[in-house]
Length: 394
Ligand code: AMP
Image (cartoon, rainbow, N blue to C red; front, side, top):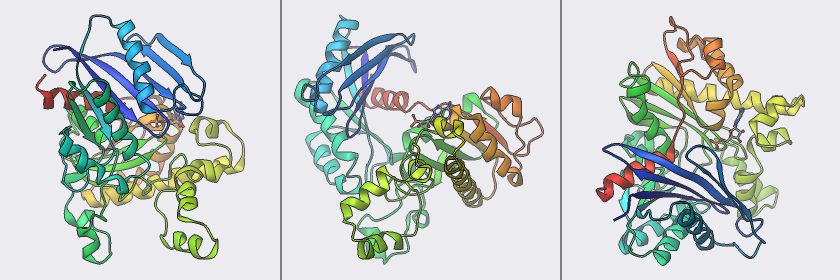
C-alpha cells in the first residue's frame, strides 16, 4: 500500500489537485498542489512543490486536453515523474452535494455513485464534474479506494426550522431546503480554532468565507448552526459573479417580461452578476480595490453591506457574538475589506486593531474588544485528505 493521498476538486473546466504524504498520527504533509485549467478551451497545467517552487507549467492545444480524464492522465504523469517510487493509498474528492442525508464523507461504491448522481439536479453546474473525476480515477486506477467529501455535510447539524423555506411542506420533503455550502472550509476552521484561538473555540462564532464564492456560517461550540447559503450556492452574500440573496420575483419577471430562458437566467445568475455585474470591471477584489471607478466603489460598498446584514442575522441566530473569523481569498488577503466589515460591526462589540489587521493577525481585534475578530487561513484540501485518511483507515 502506498503512502500518498491525492485530493481532487473538479470544476466545470478545471481539475485542481493536491498530494499529501501520510506521516505519523495526525500528520499529513503537502507534497504538491496544482491544477489543469481551461479544459477544452486553453488547457494549462500549473503545479508547485512543497516549497512553493514551480514543478509544472505546460499548455496544450484545445482538443488535446478536453476532459477530466485527460487532465488526470497529465497529473498522473507529472506525479510519477516527480515522486517516482511513491504510491497512492487513496483519493479524496470534493463533492459539492451530499443531499439531505449525508453528514459525513462517503466511501465510493457503485451504489454510492448511483445515489450521488441523484443529487445532480440540486447542483447541476458542479456535481456532474465532481462525479466525472471519480469515474476518471475508477477507469485509470480501479483498485484505488476513493472517498467523497461533501460541501453540504458540515451543515447537516442545522435544525429543521433553519432548513425550511416557507413553501408548502411537501417541497421540503422533496428536498427543496436550505443545505448550505463551503462546509469543508468551515469544518477546517472549526477544527483549527482550538489551536489558533482556544478562547473562542467553544463560543458563538461567525465565519466569513470570502472568496470568489462567498458565504457566512454561524458556528456554536464547533457545530454549524446556520449558513447564508441555501438550496444552491447562489444564496446569501454578493459574490464574484453571483448576486447572492434576491427576491425570487425577479426570476419570474425575467422569465415572463424579459423573455429570458431558464438557461439564460442561469448564466446571468452564475456568471454575469455579483462584483463583476455591479462594477462592470471584473470579479477580482484586488482590481476593484485599486480602481477609481465609481461603480467599482459601489460594488465594494454593496459587498460590505451584504456581509454586515448577514452578520447581524447570524449573530441574532446565535444569541450574540463572541468572534468573527475571516477566511478564503478576500478574507485572508484584504485588510481593507476586513477593516470595512469590522467598522460596521462595532455595535456587536468588535474593536479592530489596525496594525494587527494589516499583518493579518491571526487576532485582529484590540485586547479590550468585547467580541474578537480573527484571520484564519482555510485549507479545504487538507480537510479532505484528513477525512480520506480516517475513512480508509490509513
Ligand atoms: P478564493 O476563491 O478563495 O481563491 O478567492 C479568490 C479571490 O480572492 C479573488 O477573486 C480575489 O478577488 C481575492 N483576493 C486574493 N488576494 C487578494 C488581495 N490581496 N486583496 C483583495 N482580494 C484578494
